[in-house]
Structure formats: C-alpha cells, structure tokens
Amino acid sequence: MAGFFKDIPHIRYEGCDTDNEFAYRHYNPDEIVLGKRMEDHLRLAVAYWHSFAWEGGDPFGGRTFDRPWFGDDMAHAKIKADAAFDLFAILGQPYFCFHDVDVRPEHDTLAGNIAALDEIADYFGPKMEATGTKLLWGTANLFSHRRFMSGAATNPDPAVFAWSAATIKSCMDVTHRLGGENYVLWGGREGYETLLNTDMGREAEHAARMLSMVIDYKHKIGFKGQILIEPKPQEPTKHQYDYDVATVYGFLKRFGLENEVKLNLEQGHAILAGHSFEHELALAGSLDMLGSIDMNRNDYQSGWDTDQFPNNTPEVALAYYEVLRAGGFTTGGTNFDAKLRRQSLDPEDLVLGHVGGMDICARGLKAAAAMWEDGGLERARKARYAGWDTPEAKAMLDSDLDTISADQLALNPNPEPVSGRQERLENYVNRFV
Ligand code: XUL
Ligand code: CO
Image 1 (cartoon, rainbow, N blue to C red):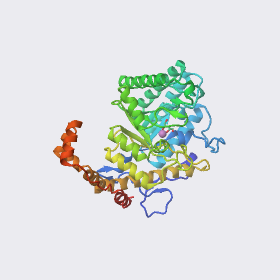
Image 2: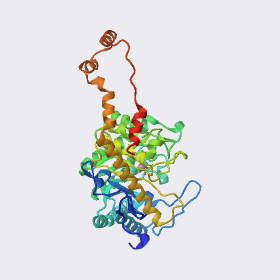
Image 3: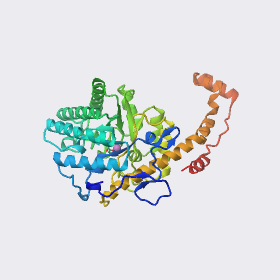
C-alpha cells in the first residue's frame, strides 16, 4: 500500500496462534457461524467521521493528528477519500458510513454544499466498485455548524427547519445513489439546553413532521433501505429527545410511524442512558425495532461519550446474543462509531484500532453463537415462564379481576416463590465468554 498507509499490509485471518500484529485472530469472514458467513452476520462498517474527519481535539485542546487530507476544499476531500478507501482495502470490512460534512468541503450556500456532496459521491462510486466496499448507511450532520445550535427539525427558526429538510433530501439522494442499505437520523441537537426557552410540545410536532417527510421521500424515490433513528439521552444537548429505545418507541407510536422506522443502537449511548447495551437491544428486539448497531464503548469512569473501539469480549458477546435472539441483522450491521485516543497519532494506530474492534466483534459473535446453539439461556427462560403454558393460565389473560380473585383463592391461595437462578445463569454465560 502506498500513500498514508504505506508499508501496512492487507490484514488477513491467521488464527489465534499468530504473533503477527497485522492479522485477524478471530475475524474470519468466510467462517460459518450458525449456518451463515461471519461477514454476513457482523456486516462491519468503518465510520468515516471518526477515522478521517476527526482531528484529535477535546474540550481542552485542538488538533493532535497530522493528516495530509486536513483542509476544507475539494482537493483535500479527494485525498481523504483516497486514504479512506485505502484503509477499507487494508481491512477488507464490507461497509462504511458517512455524514455529508465528513466527506465534502463546507460552503456558505446550500447549493454549494449539495453540489460538493454530489461531486464526492461521484468520486466514491468507482472506489466502492474497485474495493467492493458498500454503504451501510448515510446520514446528514445537522449539529456541527453554528446554524444548528438550537436544533435542526426542532429549531425555533423555520429557516433552519427548511435548510435541514433540504440537506436531508440531498443526503438521502446520495445514499440511494450509492446503494446505501439504511438511512440514519441521529438527533444531534434535537433537545434542549434549558426548559426556560423551550416549547417541548411544539418541538415534538416539528420533529414528527420532519420524520414523516423523510418517510414520504424515501417511498417517492424508491429507496428500499431502512430508516433508522439512533437514540442518545444527552450530549451535546442537556436533554436529547431521542433519549433511549423506550422513548423513541413512544414517540413513533404517538405519531403512527413505528412501522416505517427501526433503531440504530449504540453501546455508549445505552450506557449514558443508564442502561446496559443488552437492555436496549433486548427491548428493541422485543418490539421488532432492532435495525443496526454502533459498536463503540464509553469509558466507565469519564461519564461521557468517549467513543472507543470495543475491547471487552463478554460485553460484546452479550450484545450479539441479543442480536441473534432478535433474528440477526437484515439491512443493518455493526458500525464502529469509534475514534482513536488523541495520542494515537500513527497510521498503524488507525489500522490496528479497527483490527482489534473487528476481532473482538468476531470473538463476541462466536461466543454468542455457541451460547445460542447450546440453548441454555433459552431453556432456562422457557422453564421460568412454563406456568403460563397451561390452559388455565392462558385463560386468565382473557379473564377479569373478579374471576381471577375467585379462582386464585380456590386454587392457589399462597404461591411458593421460585428461584431466579441468577448466579447459575451467570456461571453458564461465563463458560462461553
Ligand atoms: C453521536 C453519534 C453519531 C451518529 C451519527 O454520538 O453516535 O455519530 O452515529 O450521526
Ligand atoms: Co453513533
């Protein structure tokens, strides 16, 4: 490989015994897991923004990275694209994801932004063809520019609503043109900083109208991909409206949009919401709302969205277990919405961050699949609710309080508690992870 990643080899599967740092130990795309290729289970994607647009800044200091593509014009955008597709070729992951602003230079006018996005999409086309890299999802960045400081769809200024609608349209067009398999809406600044200046009722109506227009436009252009909302409870705003799975589902039901939208769940966002990732996945699975995942963790000490590559097999295994329980991905996949630490300056760091993430996902998937195949958790779950399989118990659900109390007093005046067997189940899980 020449250019930014020069001398870095293509990464291949070599198995657990290799001492080659530049090899996969677990990610073996063709390995059959539960009857399906590993690559087709995981559907891994590189996130353009963190890997190529992010400069290494934090709240106390700016850019630490020195990349040849930093610069806000089309020439730099193309150098960035060259480097991005070089990384995709090195990793061999099947997908990538991007926001409009990650890939194009910024203009003062909407027309300028749309033309620049179209130009870079044309530049991507042959590269996607050459490397075989597909678009898992596209999205619009409606949160970085100062015009979005008070939101996009929920902005009090109708001109910003209009700008946002036009930007989403252009991003959906490009996603469709590049064969994208999903379109993501993360409510970047759809929330509030203070209730003192906020009309929550009105903002919810506006967010729902925007979403309805997105759905209508999807059907109008024949985009077959899935519309996904990505929940997050706070950051950047003090309170984000798309707080978590339960909140987003309530919003979708309220506006009758639950059959048109699924969810893109991110591990770090689940943690910020005070949930485990498995909680969010299991709830979405039970609601038939699980679409795709962003597999990036937070640092448990810092309490904010640190977006790190996954490195904890048991956590990842439990997450994929819930994905398997929900039936696996269809249009969705596993996006690394993960950035390096700001001291990780080298091209090798960027490659190996992804290699580690991909290996952990593969390892987690294999553990989850083994657990699923063994069936111990599902047997235990079934046994726990077995009482409900009797005709009397089923009939009770169609009964009423009067009848139930009469029956209960007659048949079963004092039910005996039954063990939840938590430690036994935890021990069981630990045999696999
Ligand atoms: C922000 C975040 C976004 C979305 C896409 O926390 O996760 O990168 O994934 O806009
Ligand atoms: Co994300």
